[in-house]
Length: 138
Image 1 (tube, helix red, strand yellow):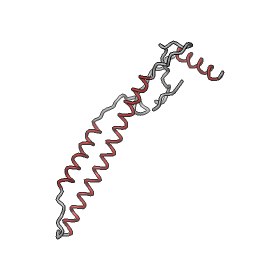
Image 2 (spheres, rainbow, N blue to C red):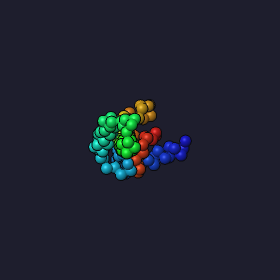
Image 3 (cartoon, one colour):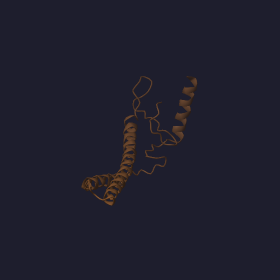
Image 4 (tube, rainbow, N blue to C red):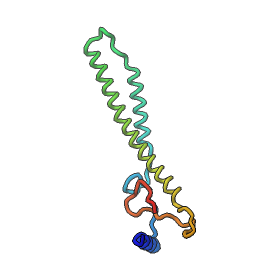
């Protein structure tokens, strides 16, 4: 317990000398760019691949082997592109979701709960250094 309070004193002294600034980013480099453009393009590609798959005419039972092969290769290619772009959409949405959720979590948890020993206007100290995905508890 004494070590924890000593650590708190040191942190407060550091904050007084060099106040930390909040950093919000989707990666370790706080670029501040959260563009959904890649997710939109990938989503449109998925929709288009679905349309192309739906437009394909299934070869008849007496179709030539070349027609069947062409049909199967188109299905395989469209499905492969669709799956690749679906993964891109999921990745981009996760990035946007995590940054939005992280920002909301941090902004809503900047204030400490009121107690008799602390004033309710005191702000939480943001994590120094590498951006953390989960807020630290103090």
